Every structure is written in C-alpha cells, then in structure tokens.
Image (cartoon, rainbow, N blue to C red):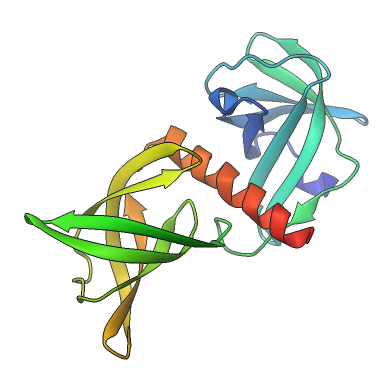
Length: 193
C-alpha cells in the first residue's frame, strides 16, 4: 500500500466533520508519515482521525489514519496500520431503496433507486426514459437534499418496467464528496455484518 502514497498522488480526505472534505495532494513522504496539501483549507486537529481514498490500478484504496501535525494547508498523517481496496470501479456502489422523482420538459417520473454511487445510480421506472437526456433529480442522503441532473446511459426492460443506469451531471464537489462518504459508510457497514 505504501507504494500508492507517493509525491503528487491525489487523494480525497475527510475528517469526522464533512465540512473538512477536500481533495489533497501528497507533498512529502517519510518513513513514518506523509504530508498532504489541501486543495481547500479545512480545520484539522492533531490526533483526530481522517479518512483518505483514491483510485488506483488495484481498485479504490481506502484507509483511516491519525493527524500528526497541521501547518496551514499542509496536514501530516501517520501511515495507516490497515487499508482496504474496496472495488475496481471509480466510485463505491451501494444498494439503496429510495423513491425519487425525476423531471424533464415539464413531465415528472416516479422512480425507485436500486443502487447509488457518487458517479451515478440505477433506478426503475414505469415509463421509459430517453438515453443521453438530462433529467432533474433531487435525492436525500443523510438528511441532505442533493440536486443534480441524471443522464441515462443504459436502459433495460424488466416486464413492463424499465431499469435505467446512468451518471450524475452538474453535481458539485461538496455533494459528490458527501455521496462518496455515504457510500463508503454503507459499504463498510455491510462488510462488517
């Protein structure tokens, strides 16, 4: 895993406060710790836990570690004792049973979400959606409403219903990081059952 923590490698970093979610880039690597430069300054404290994740050729690398030192936008972190490669896809996908409403051209569609990731979702509708068309979507994650556009990129039929898989568009970085954290927590919860 240490071979993945190299100068200029980009990670996402989250502390226990979602407000501290940011991208960061490795600045320095020593034998015992590594330092990252935050893209947007957060409030990190010495000895607090931070979660980091990044896409690698082996899949999505995830680990928790402890903050060693903070100097302005540079956070030094101890090398983690454990780590996980969660999956090969860019974003973790979790099963979720939520009802949502899509809107497009003054028409609304009721949908049931099958699974969700920070990159998109899979849902079931009674009416067929159009491929590569933008649908407005509002989904509630952890008591937070996330607004974005959903673009179907694959549609299958199941009886008289339609299963659409697609990607999010116009999803701001803060909402994407909130979704990444939500999916990670759900994935970790299901792996410890």
